[in-house]
Image (cartoon, rainbow, N blue to C red; front, side, top):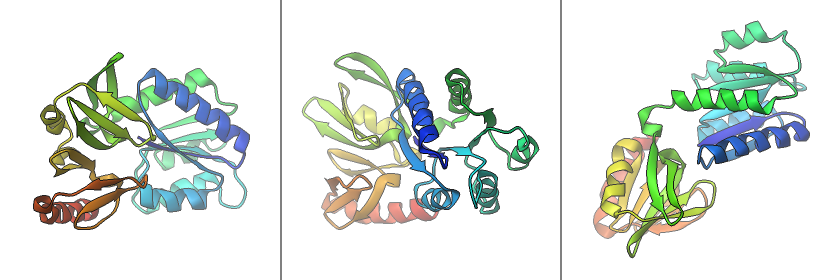
Amino acid sequence: MKIAICDDEEIFIDSTCAIVEQWAAKNNISPTLFRFTNGDDLIDAHQKERMDLIILDIIMPLFNGMDAAKELRDKGQMVPIIFLTTSREFAVDSYEVKAFNYLIKPVDARKLSDVLDDFLKTLPLSENTFIARTGDGFLQIMVSDVDYLEAQNKQVLFHMSAGRMIAVHERFSKCAEVFSLENGFFRCHRSYIVNLSCVKQFSKSEITTSHHETIPISRNNYAAFKETYFQHMFQ
């Protein structure tokens, strides 16, 4: 799950990130957090990364948060936006850009967590969770948070977008039923399944992910992977 936090004051970015991280840990979610201090950088990054959620301060110098939201909507980007502001004067404007919610700063941790819970309920089935059996018990993993899966001996290594790795005690074939082409994944090798959205570049023999890890492509799967990747990119 990719969450962007945009505020011109670093102290508010830090506090908001802390609340989001606590909420994510409670829900066994591994988000990738993107930090921005201006709307221009946020819009540029969203075009490349396709955020799942944007938490956006309204009152910022020059290009304010409402202007950034309007530009996103003008570009046809309907990513959910949670506005943060010290003033209630933008409440009407927030409805015009179809904001997901509108919170007054300083942000109350419980209120933001409740809004994030509401956001989680809106995710489509393709963003559902996988119940993984680990050495510490069972864990919910967001399908979209997985960069790639690696079969290793009698377990499957889940390489997460947040940079950590989770060892799952499950058959690779069962994982492949969930991490399927319908959910944006491709089995590029008998021991690897990759999230197509995390592919940065590829050759005939290997894929480089957006986190600079390399995984193999089998010779027999290259042509099908290439065709599927470009279909995914331009759909």
